[in-house]
Image (cartoon, rainbow, N blue to C red; front, side):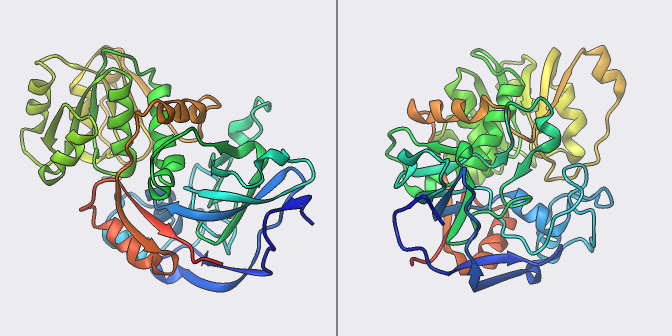
Length: 377
């Protein structure tokens, strides 16, 4: 039983259950799911809005398995990759099914356990989606992810340890905008902190129109960097509105030459790459000696052509970004509180239309993020 609660909790809830690796057929919207278990040190959250991310689709399809070598295409995202096990690859190896996905959660604390901070009750909060004990020196080996190792936000309720709960600074952002922060915004913040973003950096952002990419543009600009974005020209106006200094057509044959010209014919000090695939060698060519490349994923494909001589002769530093460092979420909320974030919401869908929402997401014609809204009680 909760130590305290704000509402009478129902016995069941609506949510989307993932029943195995696969295409859209693996998702089942149900109204008879049991509520999550509330731990003594945990809180129960009524979900207000939940963002959609590549991570949700990659986990559903088993894309992290080493047997999958293609990018995150619309076909693969809708049909899956014929993965039966090991679908999380070097992340965790496998998911336990059934699972409720959803890493991006904005919600209201409606019940607390006996060891949780009672002042959280009634607060509108975000959940830091990587679950770990920051006092554990081996936390990277024990980290779990909301929506993967733990049931997430694609439901009316979710539960989390109280230490994962983040109060929001004063903001005029909508619930839908705030719901895109934990995974998309957090990933961008973690990338830039890992690569030591600083004022004066010349930053090249690939995949700039997506959820993570659009946050990379905003945070890098807020930190005082010059930001050159790679994206479809139809998305240029939206990207300039959130801080991109120049937007380069990502499909132009001479995009690399255009990018160098846009940076004043100076090499870049930081490449923040969410695309990978065939453009990887040119991204390294654009980097100044001794500078930095960081990635959290590879939507164009995980297999890249790396000439090790480029890495060592240019003295480059590579950073992979997954589980957030302890400083990441506080830093993200600081930028939010300073007015440095304007999350772009591309679409809003009721939770039961998750397949339609993910299908739209996979078309990659949008700027920003899609958001799911659970039904009211």
